[in-house]
Image 1 (spheres, rainbow, N blue to C red):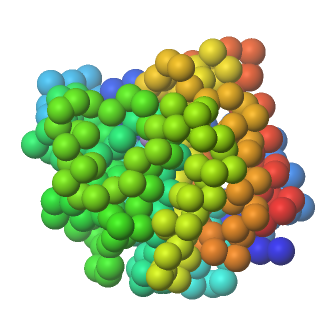
Image 2 (cartoon, rainbow, N blue to C red):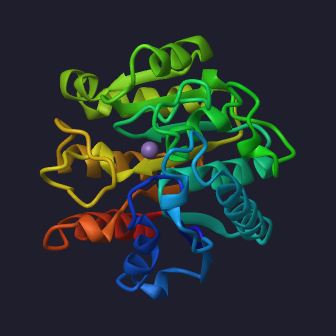
Length: 290
Ligand SMILES: [Mn+2]
């Protein structure tokens, strides 16, 4: 069994919709504390997001300040031989948690479980929401100021896999993914080829020639009729069985998995706590079996 630290990344600076910053404390209040070593929360500065609503680099300075702190916290956890399980927060927090992990392990693959590509650059984003850029940032697609706090390697796109993608902006974001050489398995692929085939392939690609794998799990991969409590829902998502099956694959590959994020839970948009219960279920599987 791994000895786990929960790191609460309490920030929604990466998206114009409020609420994801409240996710970590809600989930921390319902997990089994006996299964973890410590809870460490990092809080985003309270800023007036309205002032940045027309900015194409929304909350850039505050996002970088936050991520720089989170990066240190995750790195400290790994250097103290604990497994970092980071709870978001919007997906921009993964810039910090993922780069901290590769700082330590030097050569990691990554599985990005998400309905969106998160593969924009500041040139291609139309919203200016930084949670649309983290996957491109950590694979160093275009050198970005979003990773200035990091000195170390980046994830190689040939060991990077997007699983569950269905809301990828065309043409530019899709072009970015193709140019970089990231493998994309769509929601359709999961339905067509089955979870065992796609998830096994994803772990094969991410672990080929690497020292391990980071997994970044965005709850918006699940169908929003089942999991409405996310900031940017994308319709026609995966089923709960397909969502939990991915956790089974993480556990099957636990020797390879070095770090993990669960992101984008937004309690303000949840309906009857259904998304909260799904997130709790995922965390409980992991805490009991990693
Ligand atoms: Mn995402």
